[in-house]
Image 1 (cartoon, helix red, strand yellow):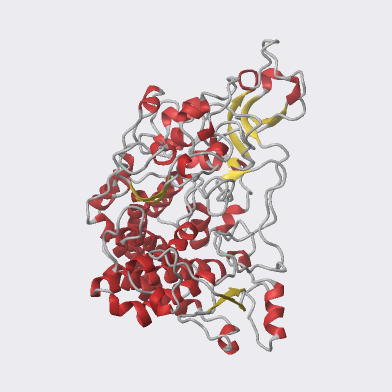
Image 2 (cartoon, helix red, strand yellow; image 1 turned 30 degrees about the horizontal axis):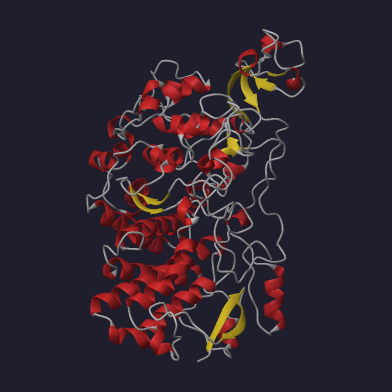
Length: 620
């Protein structure tokens, strides 16, 4: 037979044909009809395999950075670089589409989703249509329901990602005929209409997908975790961007309900330390990890994320003082009014003892210059062992260097579930008449996270668990936004501490309509931790002197607010918050930056065919 296939490039349909198709059970015989290809669960599973590396990227592979923590998600208000801060998109690009099936992220850091590419939508629709046309008669009702749910999940999830980037997008729910140019070149459909279709897909998934389909395969609980993420994003976007409050309520309720499906099982708990979530060779026994990507040297599946967390590789964007100050003290109070000893001491070695344990598990406790733009270096994604090779003269082992890392990646974890749940509940309570968040709710979510055990290394440094968040004693934070309630502020703080360098922060400030946080007007965005020149940058051959290399380069902001630059003679004066070298603020954020434009070439392509593709609002 000939298999006619098209790939959407932007909205262009490219046609190819091939004479052979892979039929795994019969290795030496090619099926001569589609009916013989779409026979059973094994055939469906083979077809679905390609989805996994696209949607469950983990740490990617090799030197790949698309959708990876640290190397992919390193753009937000948490992070500062030397010199001019990276600006947001200022003009419409020539192209922003693609036909590749690879996991390729948008070229713009403020839009961390896919390009204008409907490959995965089409693949999902092919799966659904072929199940209906060929496979259904050979499947049990339960098998049919499950695989239909798989197709609808991937279609819905890809559309939620496209909508998060572009807003309105054309909606396709079927395989398009080769000569149907009116459909191929249709203009955008409204965001709400598309997300209502996604909502329907998600409801089906949560009702019909299997609760277990074997290790490494999508099931209802993995889907529910990602659905809670997706619906929290869209529900809060609809709310905070003042779009459709009825839809906001509907989507937030589904975010809450999807999270509750996972929580109700009692299968997942916070029984491991924070560091082990990201630096373990195997996550199969970790009770917090719902789904992971496995890396194995013997199988040739490796990555490089841990190498960029090993103390030597450059981190051009690194933690600023604004992020550091947002970490709660271990008495459960903000630093300004904490009773914890040395709470106002911003030396790294003191911060690990006074702040929530996630600070110590995320950052080195010593100044790391010049590997970090602010000298605050993230080691969240490498094992503690990796830092023992720093400045040792010994070569790093393969698992912590180059692109040969083999620590597993958590793709879906329980902290996401409970933090999605508590935020959705709080928005529903504050604005949509939902029940009040109770102390029991906090104990099942934020406080359960705070009870994570400490590993021996953290305990030896003096790290302590953080006191629970109490409704009767919500922290009073002088830095709280006036338009955010005290409890919601603490829920947002918890997300910021939990997901540093992961997917969440840039997406969170986009959906909260807080992209203006990227206007680094506050001083603490250009600062790092507190440094003492002669200790942190001292010349070992000249006691009391700072290394000559830092002359005219090392700058600190002192306690009285004055800024002092090292001039080669004022060594004793160099004590204060480190000022990022050459810091300059980015161009101001524009309202249009919340959504990505489509490329000029794509709009012209529509025009050349006699059709119109509407540009994203604000980018005309």
